[in-house]
Length: 288
Image (cartoon, rainbow, N blue to C red; front, side, top):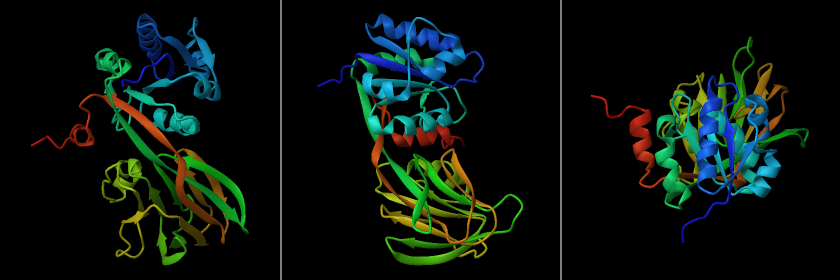
């Protein structure tokens, strides 16, 4: 049975020049389809749009049954983390550059949205990471990530040394500029730049990729979805980053524990969408 939507929220990349006219067009289109329309509170404030309810993330999760995100992948990442606990399905309209997870081109939003709103779409769940920083066994920081959790060396210091274990089994002590624990979604982000493989989003696994490792045999490795622990053994001013949330100045002995989150993100795509077509377009595999 086709999924019926009644109340749609719009989220926009606040600082994008000229975004208000696009958001107004989308809002008017949704209203013409008989849908109740709301704006994310920050989007409403930044654009000055009026005539629509301005909702917090919690209110959107409780009242809306679809969210349309207009911006780039960074906009989607930030919003997806905030809304994940509500299970709100997301549609991404790309006004950024690559657009791996905001996959509808801005110039084609109308023709893509029409069938999606009618229930004719592909549904794609994406796994999320959750982690915490433990100091003397006590959690001092926690966060969610759709892409990755990254431990990095200090800006002016040398390499960081990390003791890596998976599900309690010791893997190795790695010296590098940092370590990336990536979800399949994040495999086309920072981990790809670090030499990691591309993972299909349906794979139940994580990618662990060292950044500029001291030992060249420390290669990226695909892991099952267990708990990855990274303990700071050496290195000054190390930091950890959950997508765009960061905690600086980790201490020796701090442990970063990463596991699968109980929450997941649910993306809606136009009918006929495939992950491989996205790779062809975004990575330009069709060239030559």
